[in-house]
Length: 259
Image (cartoon, rainbow, N blue to C red):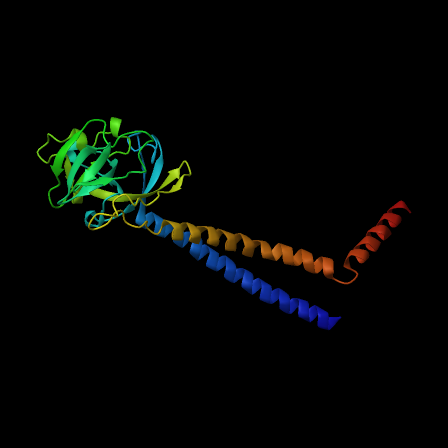
């Protein structure tokens, strides 16, 4: 009997140690994922439907902080341009320095003479509400359009500006990776511009890895914290005669009270 007790105690100490390790590791993953995410990403609220159906009015997005030099065609970016109102805006990059952007040929946007199939546009909508005259994007600048072309205040409505509707790469603050609310998840990487020299949109950032770390951390913390009570209850139930002894003791006490 003493051997069994010592074995149970050994198992209990090992379980407690593993439980503590799980909780500690879980805390590191959980908090580390949040801190990492806060360092890399910034939330924004999109006030209009100019990026519909990709992003709706009032949606809360998570945007990865990036340098403007990392922006590629097809990226959905957050930027501030003083001549456009100096407020954070969310648009899609359709042209980079040296590109010639025009619309429309067979209802499609053209970049450097190539027709672009844009699957992110609303169904049945042309690539522009009105025609876009051929515009060459200066080096170091970007041409941006909303996915909802008919109501978007984008490069197409600033063509008469000195910069012909383009914004400098330095105006970009972040690249949108996901819609956090409602829970629409990660934005699909578009392949619309892959046939052009330099390719299309960049791969998404580390958001999936960060979410995985947070979820795994939460599971480890909860599992490790729950081990102690579960193990004690199991040992108490499996102790020889434990349940019967408790029942007999209760019966004796009841009889004494009646007497």
